[in-house]
Length: 460
Length: 103
Image (cartoon, rainbow over all chains, first blue to last red; front, side, top):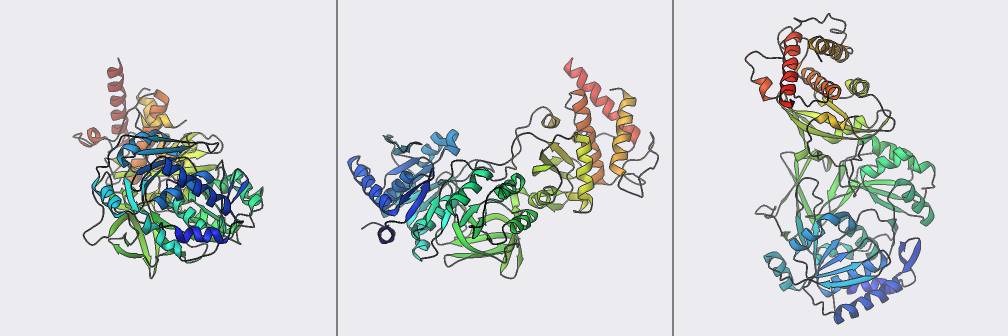
């Protein structure tokens, strides 16, 4: 008996239900059960034993899901790698000490390759000795080098044993991301249906929502901004949406209000999770509120010096390539600055991203939220930059719809900001850039491009 | 860019920056006008903005990469930021230095 018996029993009770819509084709739970069986036979034949470190290369697809479940049941250590980390794949395989690579291509064809690697990492060895399945997730690296978080899969699965609503959910986050794994496990454990999209631009996503009656859209503030800008919601019927969840970065207040206006029938919920601790259960005060209550049975939270700390039962075992971030009592410093109001918190941003202008704090998300309301502004990323006069200055890099003369635009930005924010928050340096400023995960990239000779070369 | 071009640019940029401030908009701006400090036209934030705007504008026009506010500027015996004229002098010097380095 493996650790997924309870899940497979649920699949068996709903054989004709669809578990996934992939390239607009439905796949049922009976189909999934059959594929898992095939994978087990194939893994037996290939001698992939419990405790093997196995990388899965591939994006969301029916076969990838079947393989993942077969590997969890088998007690292997999973390392999901998607195309979005292409340039880091070899590095990640070395860090995770991958022994078998199973790649599934766009036509669902698979290949299995062995790597002559011995597992040396103490954390991994301990997990293997316990017999439990594992999961290695890499932090997105938006703030430096990627860290590999090793989880015991049993801990991640625990909360899904409680039955909840079965819903049609569009996947947005990738499978090598804690949010992507969380969405998949939630849907499967409630015999719901995952709708995948080939292209994540707002029109494709909205078309899929309309076509398949999608009820849940887990997404990011950046995608919701793009949805507003593209006006894709005007071209598609989104009335099936019951719930839109957003996480991974602070939500601009204005974006939330506009989304609430265009989707009045949908509940807007903030989620909170990190590769290191899993996803917490959360409850927004209301659909147009940034105040959220986080926690759940398996989590404890505390606020220390304005920063959120979490103690989680499903926390990772540790990093494979960095010292443990937990304190002696098992608390994890999230690095997120928060405001507190009774039971509710409001996430202000990463403490590492706070800009200090002459001793006063500026949160990038707060400034971006105001700047996004300006006419002709498509996107903006706010960062700090060292300055000999005020310590740091606020820098804003804009993407515009229509070209504008920089000096003229600069004046327009300052005029717009004057009555809307304190003087020290108004961007001192205003640049117009051409490149997009969000990552493959639709998360704002505030990291500054490598410095060239002069800063002005970015402006047009 | 000669000194009078630099002066013109500083004056225009200052007018733009102060346009929204009823107490200061329209004040005459001359060589001896104080930028920062007692009787200065600007607070620290506006001084930073002025310097950055000038940097961007000059570097765009001249295809240079000068930095007006850095440790060198801060360690001058007399601050380049005390008056409009001293700032113009300092910028002209930076441009000359850069030209020399390029040559």
